[in-house]
Length: 373
Image (cartoon, rainbow, N blue to C red; front, top):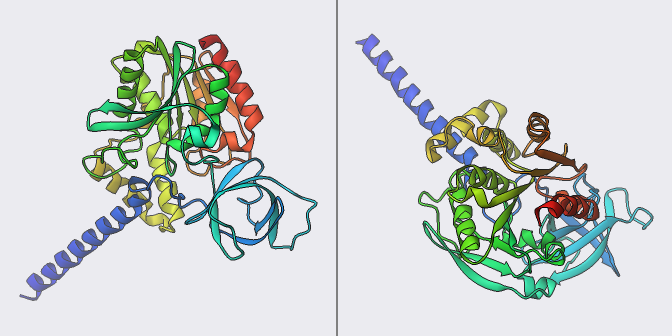
């Protein structure tokens, strides 16, 4: 009888441990699978506003606040734009002074909590950039997908798709540049975004299913006059671009890919997001297994999908990306040197390669796009 009771107790403990493991895995995987668009990723530190002056802002001294370049500065009801670090401006040992380019909306007061974001512009292309655009709906398999269309004279369109933690506003960073090059630009909101259909399970699949919304955008572009399209994606948007170029029924119309901080290993990115939420290292494999079980993703197929681009591809990436390791992009470029070019950007976080060096980014993009015009 004691043996039976002991066995029953052991089974109970095992079942409880298993249930706890499942719960922990689900919680940890939420960092990626339920990352809300437009909210900071867990890897982005909260900074405190210490002071503001004419054209200046003092922020908590941190590796993030010391980054070179131009960034959005977002708070719960605020958006501003900050430029380079002003090294000669008076400051305390625990602060950094950056140029305050503008306050888009809200106010910045000492004590406010803010974070850096790649989104330099908010609103829409007309209000933010002075660009005429049309608000359109792209017919998707789950329902209408909101998009901005900025017209241009060329018959090659650029279709832009954002990634983790951002919205289609991210595309406005390069929209003015693309408009000067006379490219029509289609900036897409896809499943899970504000105003777009919810994914059937309510989860982000890191591009594994979202690419079908990009496929719908390609079909829309071709229907309305595009002879060729260039797919420009950030983060998981880059994964979407790779998968669409490989699997779309109109992949013959894809003439080029521009991949910024591509997620080429979804498991690695998911582990990084879970770790940023202070998940103990021993539990990180549970997060990956939970994500596989919840989404149906098998193995690490994102990397496999990226193995062999068939059109000219430009990758923007750098060694300081904590979410999508640079070495995967290096391997991709090294394996396909005749078709994949890697433009390395240092001191740039995930999906912020333009922010760290706007002029260098745009020159590399101009050189890449010129033969595709």
